[in-house]
Amino acid sequence: MKLTYFSIPGKVLKSMYYGVRLFLRPHELNTLIQLANQLTDLKAFDEAVLHVKEDAQAKALIAERYSPKPLNMEKLKTCAPGSFGLAYYNHMQAFGLTPYFAPDVSLASEKIYLRERQRVVHDYVHALLNIGTTVEEEAKLNAIFMVKGCSPFTSVIVAGAFFHFLFKRPSELVKLTREVNKGFNYGEQLRTPFAFRWEEHIHTPLSEVRALMSAARPNVAELPQLEPRA
Image 1 (cartoon, rainbow, N blue to C red):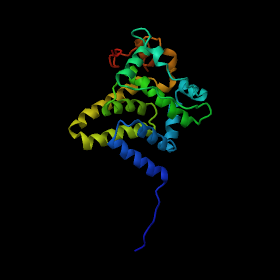
Image 2 (tube, one colour):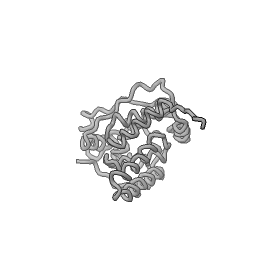
Image 3 (cartoon, rainbow, N blue to C red):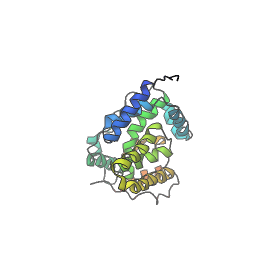
Image 4 (cartoon, rainbow, N blue to C red):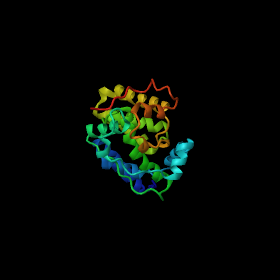
């Protein structure tokens, strides 16, 4: 019998390692970042970029490499009640989160730019839709991003949530399915998050940001009722 030898690329092995680690520790931020880094070179990410660029405004921001400095949390807490800035500040405080500091992407490839920008925008969408940070809520949020580009990372997070529930919380699989379905529905109702200049709307009323982000403006009745967190 002839033996067939094969080798597994290093990136695949690293992806498998971080995938298993994420299964065991779903809230470990560094693991999330490292897994996303390993998945950046996939052809699926090229397809995600092409999908995002179908939106003219998103395409323009990608070409510009639009990436302002992270929002100043001390200034945000002085924003007016009902503003997007205060909603974002309250969300970050409620969950003990800090803004993601993206590296300089002015000369980065489109894929690297989109990967880094998604890490920043991720928390803006969290605040916009008042979505928490449990495994099922993160799956719901990433389902929104799947509709808008389906990058390898968002796909792995949603698939990983099902894998996690299958073994860790099997009695709640239906609950997870419902949450992910809500995310897909929200994704259909929203404009792509990559087409919006979030940092320029910290003083804009949250209700107005919701309207601006609605794909069927001004009808946002189907989106969740949003109230800034106390």
